[in-house]
Length: 95
Image 1 (cartoon, rainbow, N blue to C red):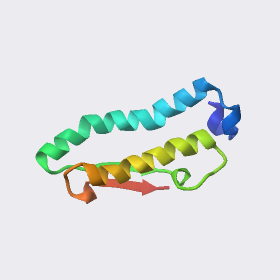
Image 2 (spheres, rainbow, N blue to C red; image 1 turned 90 degrees about the vertical axis):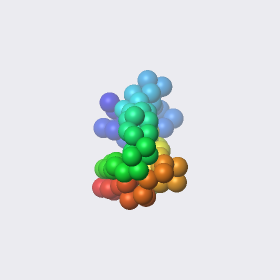
Image 3 (cartoon, rainbow, N blue to C red; image 1 turned 30 degrees about the vertical axis):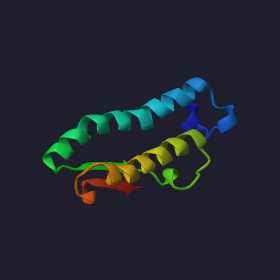
């Protein structure tokens, strides 16, 4: 996918490439959490560990990728507030 290889500017990225990036990075993460988090909450324990990217915090000239990673960063921030388990249950490691 050219979005990551050539660091395509946002205004030059095709809708198909955006959809692939969003499905792969953001929506897949959300779907997995929707499967896992209810059981964690019911048992009051469990862990989700995600290895994130600094691209979610700082722009690195690959807009679509950075936007997806920023969305994942916000997912984990909100999980800590919304799911009724110890906040240490959600660990996001930045690389």
